[in-house]
Structures are given as C-alpha cells and as structure tokens.
Image (cartoon, rainbow, N blue to C red):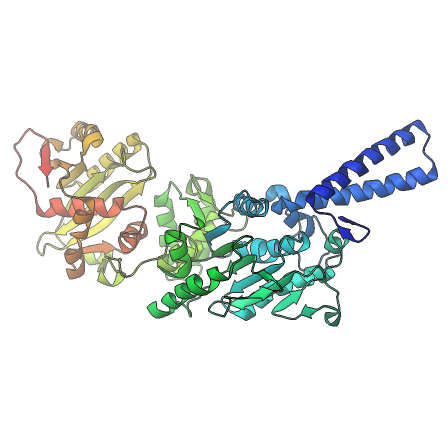
Length: 571
C-alpha cells in the first residue's frame, strides 16, 4: 500500500520509497539469478515486487486521472468491483478523446499547472461528465489526501447526495482502492465521525458535503478550513430556469454566495453541465467570466459532407406509416460510407453520428442544439421564429403557373467551414407568391459546386440566376456563365453577378416581412435551411438565408440587361 507503518506517503516520500524498494528488489533479483538467494531473500523479493507494483500504481494515478479511473473503476482494471463506471471490454486505449481532454484538465488542476483553478465547461448530455468529475475526481481528491473540505453542488441536495453516496460506497467496499490507499471509511456508519446521505468525514479528516443550488454556502468551514474544492455538476434544470427572475437569482447566488465561500489560497472550482437555456448561469459563466477557463464540447464536432443523403433519410423517416424508422435505417446502412463522410462526434463509441441524428429528429432542432450542441436559442434575439413560416408541399404547387429562379453562393474567401449553396425558388406568376423548393448546401470543392450550379439551372430552366461575385468569387461567377453558355443556357442575359453593397445581416433580415406575410414560403423538408433561419443570428452559418435573399431579390427585381452581356447587379 502507499503508506508505511500507518503513515501515508506524500508524493516525494512515495518516490523515495519506490526508488528504495526498486533498488533492493534489483539486488535480490541478482542473488536469485546467481542462486545465492535464501528463502528469506525470496520472500522479501516477492513482497518488494508486490509493494512496488502498488506504489507505482498509486504514484501514477495521482497525476494521471484517466489511469486512475480505469485502474480502480473499470471492469478491466478492477473486475467485480460494485458499481464500476466503465464496463467490461472498454480499455484505457479505447477512451474517447473528450475523456482524455477532461482528465488532462483535472490533472492540470491537481498539479497546479492550471493557474486559474476555476473551470467552466458545457458538455452535451449523456457524455459521462458526472462519472469522471463528481464520481471519479471526488474519490481521487479524497484518497490522495489533496483536499480536506470538498463541497459537491447539483440541482438539489438530493441529487448531489446521490453523487457523493457513490464515492462513499467506493471508499467502503472497493477492495483494490482500500488495499492501495488504506481504510478511509469504516463499513459501519456508526464507526465513522459523520456518515449520511448528505455528508461524510473520512478517518483522515476530509469532509465531503452535498448541497443544492441556492442553498447557504458562504461561510462554510470544516474546522479551520474553508471550502477547498467546489464540484458543480448540472446546477440548472428547466424548473430553476423557468423565468428571468429565477435565472437572475442563480447568478446572484453564484456571485455573492458560492464564490466568496471558496478558500482564496487553496480553492478550486470546477463547473460542468449542460446548458439548459440561453443566458443561464453556465452559459453566462462561459461567455462572461474571465476568471474561469471555459470551453464548450458539442456532441457533433464535424457534420456530414452529404447533407443531401441525410435529407433523403429524413424524408423516409418522416413518412406517416409503420416501419418508416426501419426503412430509414436500411437506407442509412446502404449509404453509410457516404453519409458519414467528414463526420466526427465527441464520443464515437457511445454516440455514433446516426444515433445523434435520430435524437435530433425526435427531440427537435431547438432542444438538440441546446442539450447536445451547447448552442441554446436566445428567443429575445431570434428573428425568424418558427411560427412566422408558411410551409408548402409539392401538391400545393400543382397546376400553378410557375417561373423558377436560382441563386449560387460560393464559400471561397469566407470563414472556414462555410457552406456553398445553390437555392431554387419558384414564383407563382399569377399571385407573386414565392416558394423555396430545393437547395444544395454543402462544403464542396469549387468544381463540384460548378457542376451543381449547371445541373440545377438546366433541371429547372431558371428564368434568372444570381451568382455572388464579391471579390474572390468573381472568377467563379464567370466560370458558371461559361459553363452554362456551353450547355445552351443563355447566361449572357439570364445570369446576374451580384456584388453586394449592403451588410449581410440587413439583407437577410429584410426577408422577415415577406416570410411573416406568407409571400415567401418554404418546403418543410428543407430542414438544414430552416434551422439556419430559426437559429439566426446565433447559428454559426447563415449561407442558406443569404442565398435565399439573393434568389428572392432577383425574382422581384429583374433589371433589364443589354443583350450579349452578362448581367451585373449592385445593391
């Protein structure tokens, strides 16, 4: 074990002990190999090997949280231990990149490499943040005698109590943990100083306490010690963020009660959770508190390059008939390689891309963005609310006299990861109502977009097509014109090069009155486009709405052009 004659060995003493035992074991091994080892020497060698193994295990785990988790709380490292966090068949080499990053952060706090010692992370729901933080790290700090007063806070004291109960049970019944770190809690409650659902005190005088958000924490002490570690795990819920006043109350408690209660010299605060609404406490801390190291970890890190196939998958899944979900799964399996092209998720083995897309369809975009992508909707800032949209179907367009218009928005020269877009608008000649009926919106090579622009133009025989020609995009507009001319499409009179003079935000927001009035309508299956509208201006991309604005504009502002020249519009 990691203590000698009842004395716990701190890190430096432990390293000295490792060196001493390793040197002695080496000499005894040499005696054994030369045949000079007595029975006493052999017994000593075997004892040294066993002690060295335990010492090295404990020594590594102090500054390697991932190793500590897998060594003591996994079926592979500690088979048969009650309530292991990591199931059989999962080895440390299989750990998700996110869990490696999380454990690296916890190691930095333990070693002091992270100077701020205040951390706020938002993580998608179901990504084991509680297992690593509230369960594993809590145990780690207790068994290594690194903190003497730890307060774990969650939505309610009962929830927090469940978290510390897991740690308490491990200290009592995890035989490997007790063998390496000693007895820190007796199995019988009555033999411990304090041992209940809300708090316990170890035999080494470390106190762990469970609290709920909003409870009294300022002024808490354990003997002479103020709180040395706050573990904040999912403080917020729909109930305690239901109103602006409740959110403000949470923020006041955090600022005026919680943080002042932390030890200034020894204190650390680790806050992790899922963002439950815009401007919630966690969202506020991540965005505005410069004294916190903040990060967000969405469940989807990279989206599929084949949104067209995912749209087909959605349409199959949304059919109102028995077995639609199974048919969608079959379609996915048949096109799996293409549909997963370019994708990356935060925890691939637990949340594969297909599972997340199914959750997104079932829960809705707003809830999914909030709970899995750490991207809540600010309804105060939301411009294009879902209730403003009028939707249409193919049946709605039957027997109507329509003219078709297109717009091409090339992502070259924009922010990395922006989409290239070809959007198709149908205009009712008799009423003037416009319908967005089709869209190609992907991250593609210029040649692919060129092919798609030609393909859509010939398929719909656009009355007019707008191609953005801002600076670096101008050459692409010329390429489109040349390619269409070769195919027999009169691009010299029907293609407009758009050189924008108005800010993008003003252009996009100018669509609002026409959307509200129903003058501009949308096919409901264009999910990715509608999401960009509904999340605007919080969505990281607005390429779709920008292209829609171009198409809508040329449908109503067809400038007369001289024959034989490429159209050129400035607005």
